[in-house]
Length: 207
Image 1 (cartoon, rainbow, N blue to C red):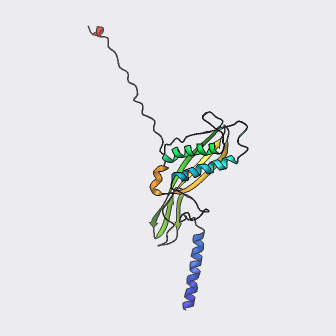
Image 2 (cartoon, rainbow, N blue to C red):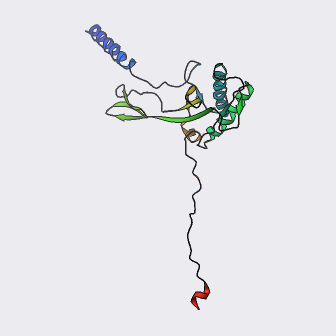
Image 3 (cartoon, rainbow, N blue to C red):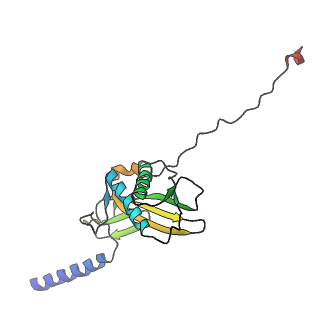
């Protein structure tokens, strides 16, 4: 009787594990070079810029003789956007990638950041992972879908007047309490005070 019960439990566990293995899961965090990196310091932002430069310098067919590229600043003044722009310029200079200050240049490099937050909620005894792209149910009561996590996507594109000639997506984990480094808040232009018209009365008219 005990042997049959053990076999039944083992079979149930095997089938349950098989179901879970087909579901998307949030990893528990980086453990080696093969896992998604985690950015925690300026040095990591610099490494992302260096990676971009290394990828771009291998594209021999992008730059024609004497051609340069213009690196466009982000329209969002976040700490990451400001620093990443400077790191990109430095990395390009170190690798001999030609850069111009002319915004009307044919080749323009732009980058933007997307911040994605993952949260766990207990719903009906199951751990539910809620993020920007939908809802995923994983496990049963008492199981977790991984620790709360937050990620950034840095998307870079080099374009000419007709098309994108180079793109790069970089994904990394971040510390949740450092979201404000990456959250994009559009720069607000000073509000105009507007103009008002006043009628000037000639004193002679009142005499």
